[in-house]
Amino acid sequence: MFAALDWPAFLIAMLAVELTPGPNMGWLATLSARAGRKHGMKAVAGITLGLAVQLVAAATGLSALLASSYFLYEALRWAGVAFMLYLAWEAFSDDGSAPPAQANKLAGFRRGLIANILNPKALIFYLLVVGQFANPELGHLWLQIIVLGSLHILVALIVHVSIVLVADGLGTLLEKWRTSFSVRLGFGLTLAVIALWLAMTTARA
Image (cartoon, rainbow, N blue to C red; front, side, top):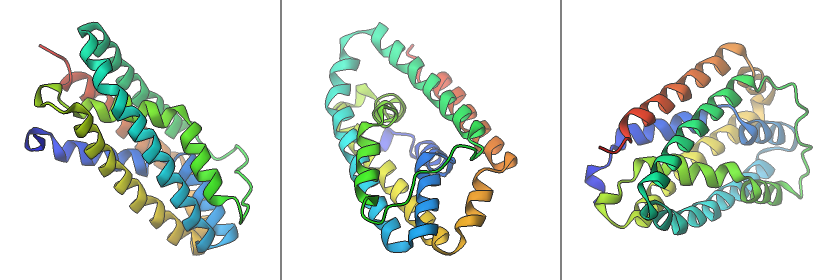
């Protein structure tokens, strides 16, 4: 089943998404720089569990949604492209001017968990973006979403742990890099290209 999937494209897309500066990256860097590695790791655990909950929610409903009609498939496909473009804009526009969340040594896990469970972008991401790489013709669509989404969570876990380890000693430098114009522009353009790639390769004949 999974041999027919475009693994290189998927892994590159997931890595680009996770390396794109965003709320989790900024908060983890700030928390780890202020409260240390231990609290940063607790936050990573909360984020990871929150993403896993969103993945299960998306996988259990995606197969029924896509099986309903060609129109719905097209609507979801273009919504996925639009969402990737939104991520591109968010990456470019996040210049760090908004005040970061306060680092509470007792609330890192809870904040990471709740923020990712309640964040509709996580569910939309698994439903509309990860789902673009699954092929209904290969069968067991929910299983494809679970496997692909689990790989994304693994990539996210590696990136988040790396952020904590780096920010534990270099939090200020990481935040400066994250909000620099060239980095924001680079990641924004990368996600825009991925959106174009999705639009071209997921169209049904």
